[in-house]
Length: 118
Image 1 (spheres, one colour):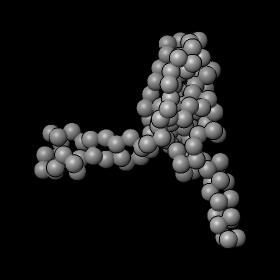
Image 2 (tube, rainbow, N blue to C red):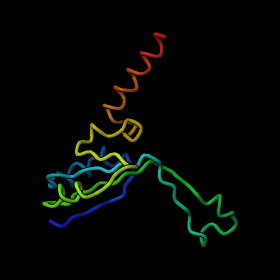
Image 3 (cartoon, helix red, strand yellow):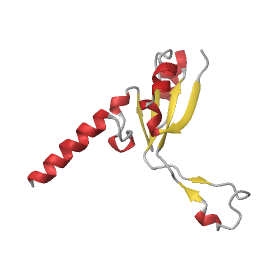
């Protein structure tokens, strides 16, 4: 198996195709940046817009990865000061979880309950 690294929207892990496709990988892990990535529209597509207005961030993204047999060595040699790295989807930061994720919903409901008591 070859190592791979994909930058995908945060909601992909909740999709049926993700579960089917990624089931064959034994140790996928996730690299979640602390700051949301911004992207720029190509200048040729949006010609009448200032460059400062071409910046967009339509959805949260994070890295889906699997380096196979060298995963542990790569992670040990890497520095992730501006990211969270996890092997389990349930350990993703709550603000990066998909809005339909039951774990996020449970956390959100708990937070709402606490704030109502105050």
